[in-house]
Amino acid sequence: MSFSRDVIIDRTPTGALPVIKPLLGWRVLVPRGGKWGDGIAASLRALGATPVIAPLINFAGTENPAELAAELERLRAGEYAWLVVTSATTVDVLVSQGVRPAPGTRVAAVGETTANALQLAGYPVDFVPSDHSARGLVKEWPGDPADGEVLVPQSEIAEPTLVSGLRERGIAARFVGAYRTVGVAAPASVIEDVAVGRIRALLVSSGSVARQIAEQFAPLPETAVVVCIGPRTAFDARAAGLRVDRIAEERSAAALIRALAEYAMDPDDRRPPVIS
Image (cartoon, rainbow, N blue to C red; front, side, top):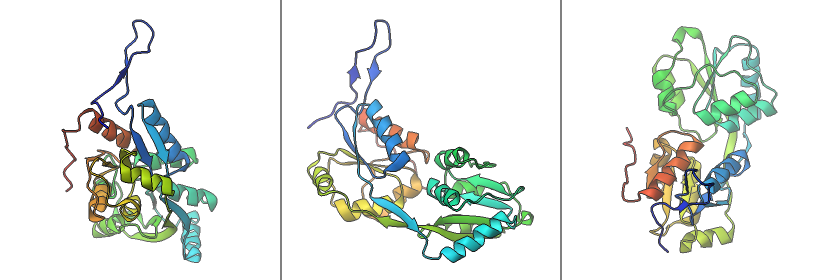
């Protein structure tokens, strides 16, 4: 099956601009469900694609709930100067625990998606790095070592980039496991659709998703298009043995969809950002 660079559906009223749907005819694997998956699916449909939602990861409680509870109590008591949140899943944990940082504790978020999740849950957001990554947060960190300790609740398998980077700058950063990331088996029909090329593209939203794709779907057919949500995720995808066709310039759902649409319109223009 061949795909054109773009498809224009001219069903607009007279005088209106035509609607460009570059993903018309594409079936796209969306590897997470929930609000994130539903939002991605809606954006894909708007561009003509057929989303296939097949969650490949899920989240479970931390294996050390007592440690998490102790650190969250310190957060409530105002013992931390900063709270750093790196994912919407961490926001869910904070909400489920009924945690509110003490007045005076500032909140930093990695990425627009995380910042939006915090704000929707009623948490203030004091800082979001322009480079939506752990490295970007470390580089742009607005705090001072004299401010006090920084709490970083993350997945138990999170890369140490953020905490170690802050510590190298003299910041007293403390990691605590907030949740576990566990793999979820894809339906057999989805595995078959990927294998025979009926699913044209796979979205990779994290290193955990990349590892599940490699474990459950490899080897991918040559026609499969793999799009990652940022340089760090692309690095993890390559480490898992996946070929990366395009990298979103920002860690956001909108950037991920845009990267796929740009690839569809110009597949020969393969310009993934340089990973520094």
